Length: 68
Image (tube, rainbow, N blue to C red; front, side, top):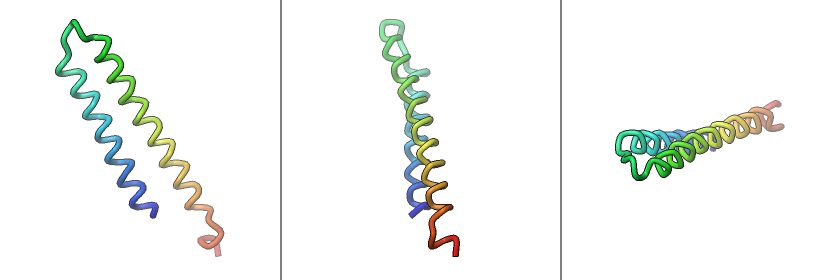
């Protein structure tokens, strides 16, 4: 279960990086505020899913069935 969760997190982080890359390299002056929103959203996705991964790992690591 942890492995599939980490794969999902990796894919979301990859999508967020693609969002940031697209925002930086396809911007126009007229839509600069949209570029900023895209970059902030991408960074938030990366932050949220890394914290989710850390929380899932800690829960998995301290399962009672695993400690026996």
